[in-house]
Image (cartoon, rainbow, N blue to C red; front, side):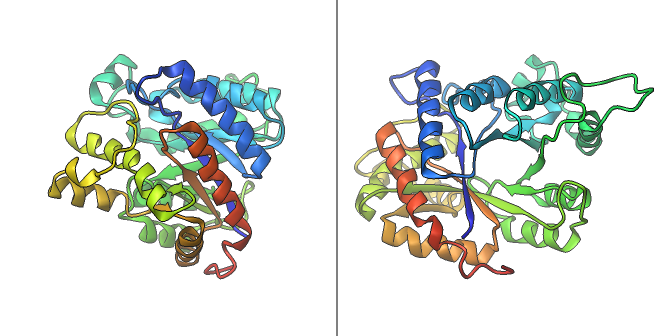
Length: 335
């Protein structure tokens, strides 16, 4: 059985605001915990009217307080936007309040545009020091030495698992070198997935945190009672990606009857490529397609995001995925 987790982008849907999105995420986290999902992550994005998780550590605190056993974390914190000491203090505080339940996924992308980066007071060159910043963060979480001048309080000596996130070979190489778990963003950048997983496994060096590779690709899943209903619900996801192509990001839109009238042939081709790992359908369809994905990738875990406009239908989608979990991974490569 492969582990299954949730990536929640805290979507703001058309006609609602950030408060509505945050309250729905709290409700969804409780639902996911009851369904047995392994972890629940939110991601750092800035200056996006359709995503309400900009203050990522604050959101994680609320989600952790609303749940009791499920791991809660960041998928991820965009480390170039922050001093490692600040992140060590924030996630040290979360770990102190919710011991044994906090994950810290780290990415080197800014999670925003260049203008917003300047508003964050970060240099476009900040990503160049990402490996050094990860090492600095590890050192801040380690037990403090007797003459250590800079200490993260809370943070030092706490067991906050670090993950490397990525959509290219760079993250795979870094995760392998440091012996950290690796999550690939195939839910929006699928091209290098198989190559990145191969590099990660081939070059992995055991560490104190992790003795063997642990790979977790991210995927979109829209599940419903029938294939037709799932395809209808998935038009919200498709509209979101068309908006990315058009440079017009906005709130998550309600589903539409005919997506072919919405996008051009070129947009359809581009979005379909980006959504190569979007799994849309009934339980029977997903049983077959998710099973093949897990077998082909050898994933230790999959992280599922479900950008569905209707909150109750989104919860139902996760129910369907949870029911399939015992059957996934039986034929996993390398298992």
